[in-house]
Length: 556
Image 1: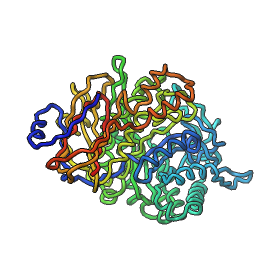
Image 2: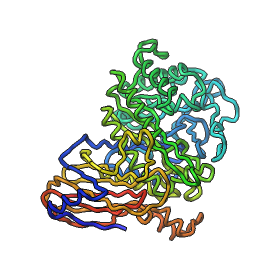
Image 3: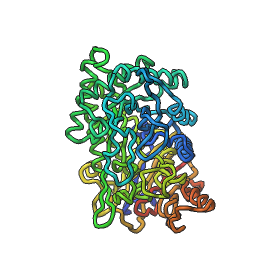
Image 4: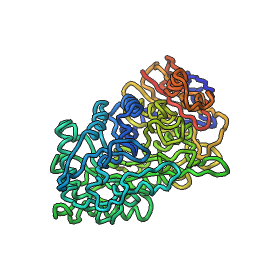
């Protein structure tokens, strides 16, 4: 249910301040430019990139964003024939002949990066993992056969080990960056970010901390030899707020600042971006999913705090290389019931509420927060709505993708917002959103000729609840009239999952059903109206169901 009204007098506007749920947006109170930190995405399986549904989704991501979208993917140097599988990918970029001489083959990597560049996207190019012929420890088989429900560590094979020859490793990186410059041009590649490996403090790196620093130094030397102006960073640490992870990150920074470079023998190592991970932790409690945003926010706060503690990194671009409600995108809800939040509006409302807090954390820390990678893409030729952490299923967009469509309409400057029902940042850091009331909050922007307000009604517990009336007051609108667009994500709008369930949850939907689902997956505008602005004020009352997200857009 939704209804709409416009405040036409100041007296009436004052009356709304006594209502229970009030959000005030002052378009004259600017906070900072609206950085598109959300326009970053990633996934484990690089070969999905150029497949049918992968290309479709990448086109949609490029179309929804006003800026180039950055994309990060694992396994760009892994050996194999390019066959896609869950938590697996390969490009066969490096092999050795019978005499041990390197053989480079860029065809599959080119098909991946071409797909990005053709859409105006940018690689957050991950240098990893170890090719089979270069691995120092290569028990067979090299390719794993992991499936949901299997132990996570089954994915770890020879690709997770250091190189047997660091000079060959450096030369591989050099040849790759050199090839990229030749194919796409120096100016284009200068806009990319390169980063070494993934979660070296976890399962992905089967060697010591010092050995990782050596891996990084040799890779960075190869990058810089091919393109001195290239931007490189790391370490994409896991569990950033844990004691061990903080030690890792501090030691990595100290090595890059003043350690002896393993590759050059000189002081320090190149570091143009600092990357780390942040994950939440949902659980099943009494048969229902209960989210937990606190660990994710604490990871982010820790990463910002560490970066701020060194003059050399205080102003570096900070990238959350993976920023998600939990840790395994390919673990569906059949094997991991705590992941049942992913198909419906729990995921979309969590995304809205959590990204708003990321901005607040960056404001508090006064850091150069560049991007937060949502580790969610699509899984080709998998069951419909299996409960993967993805943005679309079989080419049909899920509700969460529509939050990013809303973000894409938020431009200009972030604006001050006051909400009497938005949980304080300190509470979210400490105990997430677990109180008796839901989190009704907002994020707002103002551009030269427009304003946008994203409003959500979120709670950690996956329970139904009655819709609540939320009065959104916009002050200092610099026009006498404007066009209002209202967009809504809930169980009845912008929601392919609910439509699919009403169809009987078909695993082999007809073409007509697929067309219906594709339409249901788009962001729905539920109202378009020209309105008068009186004394610079407007009131938009919303009726928001639990886990709903709305976007108010004014153009004048």
